[in-house]
Image (cartoon, rainbow, N blue to C red; front, side, top):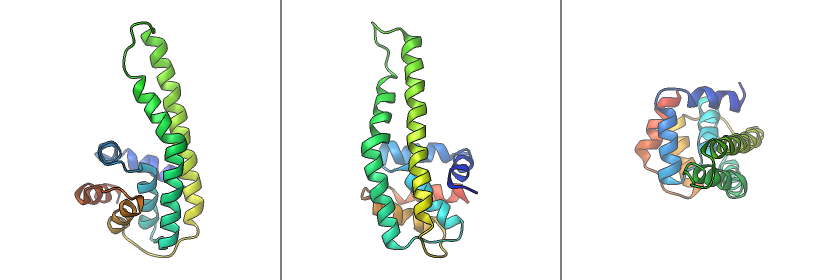
Length: 152
C-alpha cells in the first residue's frame, strides 16, 4: 500500500485526526512527517538515523516553502470580511485547502521515495518519539504514544 493511501485510511480512524491536529496546531509538528515515520514502522521497517534526519529536513523545508504559507492563508480566510462576499471567500478558502492538501501529498510522495533507503524493523511508538525529536520541537509523549496506538 502506498504511503498516501495508508495515511488516508489511518487519518480516518477514530480520534486520529484530532490527535494529529493537536500535534500540528499546539505543538508545531508535521503530520505528514509523523505519519511517514509511523507508516515505515508499522510496515516493519526502521529508518536509519541519517534517513530520519533527511526526512525531517525535507519536511521542514517544504513546510516553510509550501504547506505552512498555504495553511496560514486558508486559516486567514476563515474570518468574515465586511467587504468580501462570504460565498466567494469560502470558495477561495476551499481552493486554497485543495492546494494545501496537494502540497502535503507532494511531500508525502517525496518522503515515500526516501523511505526506500531505510533499514529494518521497528514499532510506531518509538519511531514517533524519534521523529518528534528529529523535527526539533517538543511534543508531549502521551500525544505521540496515543497517536501510535490509533495507527496500529
